[in-house]
Image (cartoon, rainbow, N blue to C red):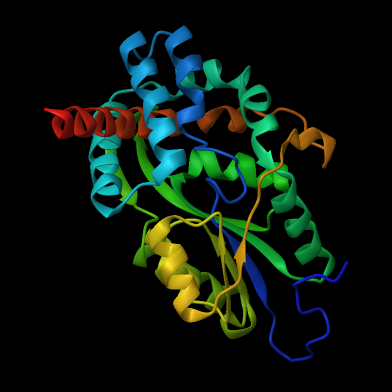
Length: 275
């Protein structure tokens, strides 16, 4: 089978491959997936778990637009404020592999491997917290991550966001990383499912829409971008050797804060629409 990757192209620049996370590599929202674990640990309520499940459905069917992403950021800040990082780590340490392992797309893992075999660095770019993205990136063998950064003081989340990896901020961070690492963005690749990532996709010479939402599909069709369909979720451990558990991996917890924020907003938005 012929690959869509251009292995034969010769140039002096050093290309890289940039991947969005949710619905591109992970088969659903990496953050919403952790709500049950946090309910069991007493950090969120049963009502929040139910809203998270509903938000997951809405997210999978229609994605999240700009306003929803901004609301998620606001709720993330409010909900996380005061959470003890050590408590969060303890809860998530036992569920990291169980939650993330079965969610990856087989096609995405193959594509990551293909880029690495071609000598390209692989970078995960996600609006999720770095506490979510970094350990997943480690599992996948990524060379770097670009992610939202929450502020921590005295072992607790302050509720402030130092960097929100969203929309144009993603593209700007990609350009900064390219300058630091010597990547040639014109020869680089990018993959995402959401129209909110058009800036990220347009930052490279080889953009790809993966399981795109309606708006991104229209944009990709107009631009002539390849449209990829990933539909085979598999257990990550069947594809790669997972690293031994580390305390830092437990910090995936912060993603649930974003999940609950999105769930609360999406649930209330649907209720208002039905009123």
